Image (cartoon, rainbow, N blue to C red; front, side, top):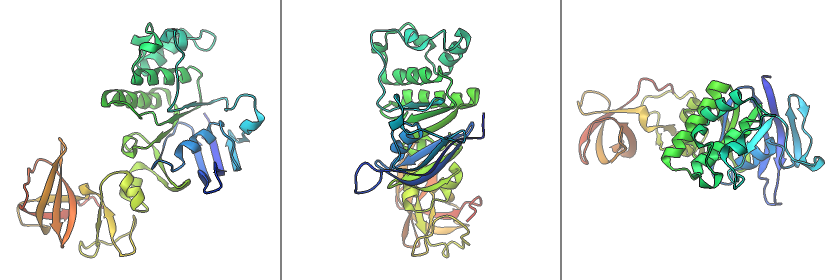
Length: 327
């Protein structure tokens, strides 16, 4: 598989005259990568995925597949690009047939290879079922299996976790992970829940107003966001004055007031009174494996992550920065 499979170069797509849905985006998809595209609703991420699939035309820019410029869908009888498979969040399965009838094509793939895909996608036990009787999560896994039957080089998934209950979402995550681990499948995934892709992605692209505003490894995007928009996509954060904490800032976001973004887990909390800065507990929130604690420090409210401390409102604590913080 080629290292450089798909390249979008300064791509623009506008639906109205007001503002482009995608504006000057350049994106490189390499072989075997697990790439996640995230952003708020209307940021352009789904449009970008459809452009990459060759389903809608670009207004300007270029798209290359294996170094060859892709034809516009306007110039093709059937839009799309062989080798690139796309699953819409609004997919439909054919009705009045069994799952096996829908999936298996002896001219497309051997039974042995098909069974491998059935197992990876967790649909082997559904083969005799009528497609009308499947749950939403089961239908989605069947739809993914159907795409894998075509042996695509690139699999594009638009909101694969949308509208799934926790059990089926977990199953879908495991399927997508198995495709990468067992099949070395190149996957580009769009999600409006960025925290769903943090443990999975090799690289994350963050979009806003049709533009890519940050791209990098999950650790970097999470801990060194370029602004508060990116920080907020991935969960709670604090804005702190680095001078108060003795920090020398080498990276990450710094506001016009000189504050930096720090995640709740960047702090440690203790009750021994021997280290860190004095604080007072304002509120606690229980999340099962940890608590998030609002603490007043330097006349500012911090959110700090705590494990098993069972702190209560009004309690005096000490707050310090984790030694792993590299700012």
